[in-house]
Length: 364
Image: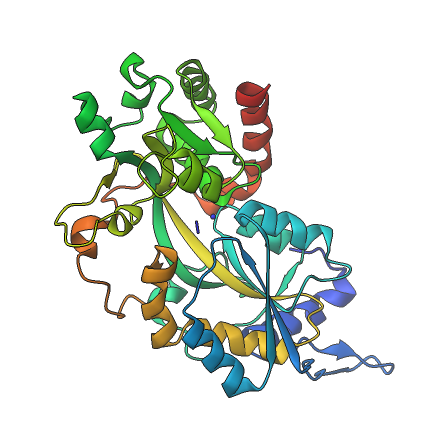
């Protein structure tokens, strides 16, 4: 899990760039100019090995991984350089010597940065579901939506019941004295859920009002950690880590995975008035040694089997909304009716400023 976005061509090269984009969106390769000044399509690269680069919350059933490898004949390696933010940073730092062939886990808060830096190339699957197409990052065709979910604060309901304290419900509740030292969040500079929730505070409090809100959170003892795994699995009291903090930034779907065997209630709940709608994408990495395999893997992620596997493995809703959801998701993993949104163009233009100013305000 657990959420960044063109190149400037000369007038002589503009037409060629447009042709390249159109060819890429159709699933073809970007044409290269010949010595005579004409253009001809270059065959997409292919090798016997496929390297898939993902964030550290990526998970699919072993059976599906084996099925993909068997059907393609590739030796498939999975590389996980960190959370979603770290993933994009590593793709940019290594773009002259790419980490792999295909990437999964770039979200809509980092998509603009990945596209602007040229780390992914155009490809649109032929069998792209309409619901996935509606979640597109932009019109470049460089990223394909695979899943989505709401990033929001989760509460350990057992902890609050034991303390005879009602859980908070809103952003304003989180800065009240009774919730001091209870919240753990992810650093937006390194974490896609962290950046998603920072963006939610911008949507809720405005810019620069979000900074005043974060000052209030800091004064109320908010704890900042690097990424989702540390926040949820180590610091949060309501999951396996049994940490000390009963409030954590996670997903509205997380409570579905905190229902004890045989129980009818989850041990946690999502605060649906604190949410941001996150979309996660896959793309062909620029300079891929196995571009053919990269395209096949993106197609694979959109198959009904994989889309149905995503909720149980990665706590996210499948981009193909025709896929049947797990039992009890409507009860334990609802989406927010009105998540706080910020336009993709605004995120792309302001993301770095938000992170810089947040860091100066909260980290110092």
